Length: 433
Ligand code: DLL
Image (cartoon, rainbow, N blue to C red; front, side, top):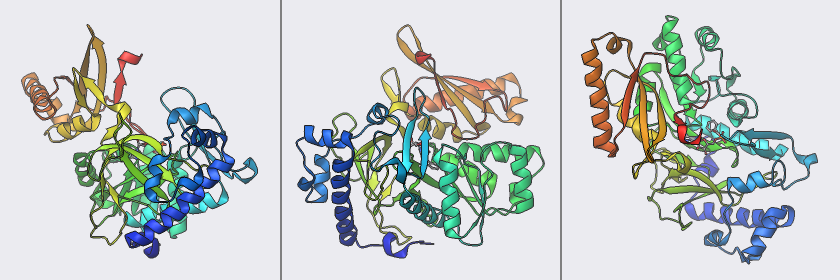
C-alpha cells in the first residue's frame, strides 16, 4: 500500500519543483550555518544564488566520509545542540564512528519515511512487526521502530541477539512482519529449525531486509526458508538511516528513492562525472529536508544504477537497483574486479552449498589471492570425500566461468562460519592485518 499517496505519486514536474525549492533552501542554510560547507562553496566559487535549476546541483562539491571524520563529532551540524534531540553513529571498520544528529522535526520526517517504507514492504496497521535490527547507535532498530509506530502497527522491539528467545517470541506472539539483516534472517531460520520450529507454521507475510548487500539468489533462499516475501530496504546513517529507499512488494524490482527528501545521482567514482540513468556507478545523495545534519552530494561508495521507468505499484519515485557492493569492498584479484555479492550469487546456485560463506583475501608473492570458505549442508558433509572434492571443483569452476577469477575454495563443516546478529562480515582481508 502507498502510505503517502500525494508525495509518492507526484508527477515528475511537480516533484522537481519541490526538489528545487528544497534544494535551494538547504544550500542557503548550510552556507549560513556550517563552516565546512561555507568554505567548500567558497573554494568552488559558488554562492547559494547560483543554484537556479536542479542541474546546478552538479556544480556543488562532493562530501565524503573523510570530511565527516575531520569534523568529528558535531562539526557538520547545522543547528545548535539545543535543537538536537537524537544522536546516532555508524561504526566504520577503522577509527572513529560517523556521527549524525536529528532535530525533533527530523525524527518526524524519518518516522514518515519509515512508515512509507514498511507500508511498501507489506505492513499496515494491525500487523505485528518483529524488529530484530539492533537498537542503539545503529540507526536500524530505532528507525524501524518509529516507522512502525507511525504506521499504527504493533512493534516488538526485540533488537538483535538471544536468538532462541526470539524464536520463542515469534511462536508465541505471532508477528506478521520480520525486520532484520538478511544474514540474521537466515540465522533465525537455522536456530528455529534446531528448535523444531518450522517457519511455515509461523504467521510471517513479509520481511524487510537490508543494511548489507544481498543477492537475488539470497532472496530466494530466504523466501524459501522463512516462508515470506522478502523486500530490500536501503539507507545509511549519513543520509538519515533506513528509509532512503525501498522495494515495493508488488514489483520487488529496484528500490524507490524518497525523492521528495533526497536527490540521488550516480557518478563515475574515478572522475566524479554524473552518469546517465542505467549506468552503474557510485551513488551520491543530497538531503533536502533535514535540519540537524543536512548533507550535500554525499559519496556513499555504494555501487548501483538508477531506473526511471514507471513501476506497477503506482509510485512515480525513481528506483535504484539493488546495491551490488561498495567501492571499498571491491576485490581486485589478479586484475579482475569482483564484489562479494557476485561470489554469493554463484554460490547460491549450487546444490549442497549453504548460504554461509566468508572470503579471505591475502597477498602471496605480490599477487592477491582469494579463498572462498563456504559451508556445506549436513547431508553433503557426510558424503564421501570424493563427493566433497567434486563439489569443491564445481564451485571453483563456476566462479572462474561466471566471474573470470581463479579462487581457492575451502569447504567447511556446517555451522562453523560465524553467524551475525547484524551486518555479516563477509570479507577477511589479511593484507590489511
Ligand atoms: O545500515 C541503515 C539501514 C538500517 C538500512 C536498516 C537498512 C536497514 P549504516 O550502518 O550507516 O546504515 O550503513 C550504511 O550499509 O552505505 C550500504 O553500504 C549498506 N547498506 C544498507 N542497506 C543496504 C542494502 C544502515 N539494502 C551502509 N543493500 C550503506 C546493500 C546496504 N547495502
